[in-house]
Length: 159
Image 1: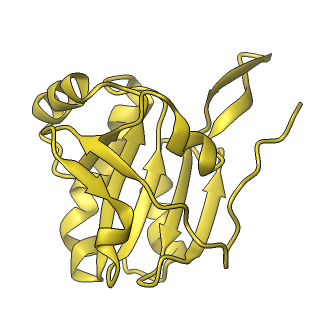
Image 2: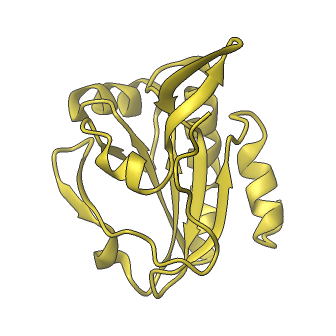
C-alpha cells in the first residue's frame, strides 16, 4: 500500500482556506493564537461521522474553555454540511474540501482498507495545531466512537 505522507508533531501545519457550512471562508492561519483541533471524516450524515461530530459538539464548550477551536473537514459540499449541522444540532465548524487538496496535504486522503479491500478515500484523522501553527498531535485511522474522549485524555483535559 502506498503511504500518503502524514504530518508529525513538530511539523508546520499546512495553511488552508476552505468554505464552511454557512458559505463563509475559514483560513487556518487566521486562528493563530488559539489551539485548533482539525479532524477529517469521510462523509456527513453517516453513522460514524455523525457520532464523532456529536461528540465534538458535546465537548465544544469545554474544549473552547481550554483554548481549542474545532474544525471538521470532509469532501462534502457546504450545502450538505449545512443539512448535517441542522439535522444533528452541531455547533462545530464544518469545512468543505471537495477537491481533497487539504485532505491530501494533511495526510488524510489516500489508500486505506475498507472491508478488506484497498480503496482511495478519506482516512479518519485528527491533528491538533498549537497557537503558532505547529502540529502538536497527529492521529490517523482513529475510531469514530470514543475518539473525542481519548483525545481529551491525550491532551490532558478532564473528561
